[in-house]
Length: 378
Image (cartoon, rainbow, N blue to C red):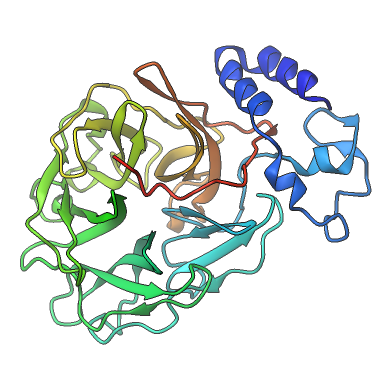
């Protein structure tokens, strides 16, 4: 399929959302297709365009993907571009503390490995849940933030680990970076503004009849946490779940855009179809932040229920690939459900943030060679 045909198909099939997909298809350069190995691609010899059902070259076929991108349980995905690979770090699953999934083309995935095989002593040996990892390139090292239960209190704390490269095993610091004596701290996120690192996290108030808040703090040269600042709390109707414990805001991801800082977050109950993603505008990584949209920017449908836990990779100015998890037909682990990995396009259209999702139909997204993690420049 030619670029012109792909654009035309997206316009015909997607309507208004198709315009956004078409623009991305037409503007980008097929990075993933160029980095796929035809000798190892099981569809390369078929000559069939999986999106349109027409005959075409293997490179065009490799450029298409559809959701879910990864069928494995992959909660709270965090995307990193490294060399010619895309790395996806997720909440603990299948016996791995921090599963690391790797791909060259968003379709063929290597077996996951554990990005944090050795836990620090402060983590509870009885409850080795590690939630919502986040990764940041800082100077000559990579940082990994994670949430884990403290062995003494049973409350979640935020820990940091480091590695020379993001596809190597991270080594955790011996003590947690930030804890609270009354409430758990979860869902960390790392971002840099002009080489100054910041750590965001959620105060897990909905677990304990307290307000849920997303806060931010600056990290010093020794990675010690400064005074935190509250960015947002639960304030919109769609963030209200069926119970107090399912009423929350969480999973922050701070993104630098041409129009300023955007704080992505998830709200409502994670184990429900009503879980969704919203955003706020922030003046700086420390706030203040304002929710300017009353409805979610990404809500579920029958094929992707309860989308959330999102992170992004920059494709171009004002254009990102958004990764998130969602349930399928079964919602909840007790019902046999999985939070599978999904990806869709996110773009600033004027002053508005738009996500073209959830999608299930195949379409092509290019990852250009200068793709980078969302460290931000302010």
